Image 1 (cartoon, each protein chain N blue to C red):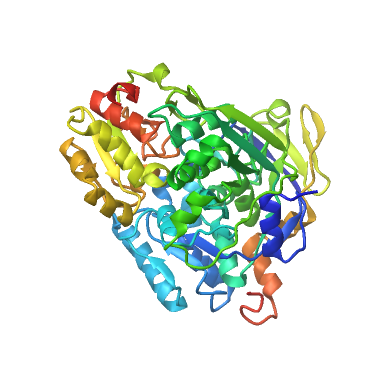
Image 2: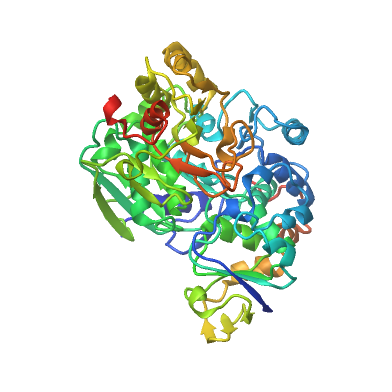
Length: 171
Length: 418
């Protein structure tokens, strides 16, 4: 999977409350409406100005805090092509992959990527190219790539269950 | 080579003889936890195309995030959940009269040593206090467990954190864990299993251990846990839903890091806005004006927390500029607090006793903040906008510090009230 997009850059510890505020977690159920509030309490201008394919770049511990999956859903629905961060909170990382949103770990992300520039990513090869140069990042594991290629965990599970009787995997 | 707690439980629950750090395994949880998000989970589940959930005995569903429903939307959400529970024959459902999911889950005997518990809530880590491997997951993941009974997990590295010395009077588990988060950082234990041990942990009640494990999430941990002991067994007697097998790390298990902190002389700790690792001694922020004081939540809403606040508030009045909100973590806690006279002391001091639930912790209802206001809370998060308002500030502290500060109207060291 290869992506190219314009960068929105943020700092460390971007938490799920500023990505998708808790007050909306049970009142907004439509993913399109979630997108309207993406990053609302961090960067109020983001949702109105983000373009399809744009990339979010951040520092350490992106997505820390609540397990709310809408934090990944709202970014994906807003058109974000991938999140590139120096590290991810573990539940956000899972939620992103499970929603079909690539989460790429690049330990020098904020050092080598600038806001507004266009960068490219080759997920399978593990290569990021910005104005500052070309950098190697850990490629996604085959397991994670498989979920992304199927479009997320739910379509992946449907595919795995295809042809089998209901609940046959249960123990 | 010996095995860690995490390695042993993940091997057992994935059907492997042994597993290694970094390995991805398909596990089958002994129990799951979901709350008001079960409505969304049920919709995802139904989209997968499996008719019946894998096992109606294993999910535990507790309504707590906005109870009773604040608006028609929340009410419709709860209705969807009740209908799903009935349709699927789910055996363990707790409606709006139960309390915060993590307290209810433990009190009702679902959190047992050696169990693998997955919950669609980040503070699922709480059950590690009873020796369970308990981790947070997302909604789609819960829907997939409902459909298939399994989910993938990566076997984590383990940090062992030893708390040495003795906690000073009026300084408790909340102060200890805030101190640790301040030292390690919000990502200091990212993806790790964290084993809490040492003399201070041994002296903590199960409730105090729940405070530690609850907030392990705030240092990025996948799980936090305490190896079961006599206190665990005593707490579980009469509660445990099933037989259990205690699991501990082998003496020669490989820990990625072993950290020791001496708790003797620790000051009460406060997390300043807007990150949980922005921690300092209470002395550094003493005098900060507050408008709301909150005692409760899954972090500090147990009887011992309410009683600690009541001891300070007994015979005193909350400052007229402060709203003191008290949320017992469960109906059981509420009932015990009534019997013990704790509720009367809190009411006499001017506190507002709310129904058990999450309250305003996530900004949904019951005590949201206005722009420019400051809340001192016993909860676990102080992120910008967390309590419903982007222009408000949330500080985190122990029940003792919150109670002392409610009396004075400003952040206050609780020592003068002890």
